[in-house]
Length: 221
Ligand SMILES: C[S@@+](CC[C@H](N)C(=O)[O-])C[C@H]1O[C@@H](n2cnc3c(N)ncnc32)[C@H](O)[C@@H]1O
Image (cartoon, rainbow, N blue to C red):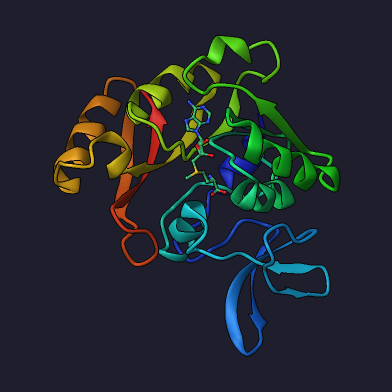
């Protein structure tokens, strides 16, 4: 837990320490400092953070108040091959990255090689009891981007790890819940289910960067 970092929760346009807007080939882009992971442009130590490849990057670009100041303990659910979680581990504190598919997890291990604060866990986010002995309690932030049915349930089941003053940063993919339903209706249902354990502070469609996705910032009740 890092209460000082949470205390300096940023106003809308502020970025976490360790995230900057920098020029890459004449275009200003979000960037963190670390080894490149997915072929992104670099400038010295800095690597561009592509919001079209990252829902958290999109939430930052859209000015959502994600409550990350830099240095927090993070539990990241649905890490895939490490595109986003590698950026997170560039500026956060201990970052536990849960991914249940073996293929992307191999790339995730590679991304972790140069990141001593990134801890990949080949686990199922629907079974938090299988990693409860590894992940420290009172994490500052849960980032969730799991392409699975029952995304609200996953967030509720993992709330046990979150500090009382922590934040859930959730990307909801409508099509993972039901490909046939109107995304707006799916998002309403997910928000309603989430309210069993979280107070929703902000939610916003990520349409500019990710079709049929909703970004949610919430805190535990
Ligand atoms: C959209 S991708 C994540 C992309 C990643 N967050 C990024 O931005 O770099 C969704 C990932 O969730 C993983 N996933 C789906 N269900 C899961 C579960 N129950 N536990 C862990 N990972 C899961 C999938 O294997 C997939 O890699």
